[in-house]
Length: 114
Image 1 (cartoon, rainbow, N blue to C red):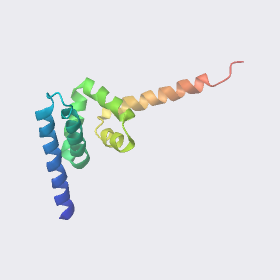
Image 2 (spheres, rainbow, N blue to C red):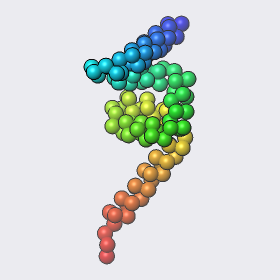
Image 3 (cartoon, helix red, strand yellow):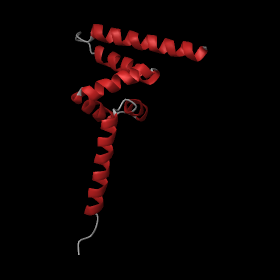
Image 4 (cartoon, rainbow, N blue to C red):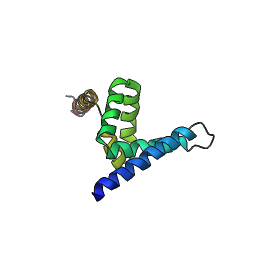
């Protein structure tokens, strides 16, 4: 019961951050984007439906997927881990193939030429 109440409180705070971020995004003081990022992070971390919604958005909107992959690589460990949970299956396969090809290329370059 307490953990369920805690989750609802976190999700309520997340939606409050999202609403405040949307309301202040056009102000000259840069508060909108951090509030939107905090709200999105909390929703992804605490809601299965939120993760699935972000995963669907990433699957259908290519530039958003590329931006979040870029952010995953540069974000801190906890933030990157949470963002990686929203990767669509195709992105996971593509990233795995890229990493494999990079390892193979680096393996070929390290061998001495005779």
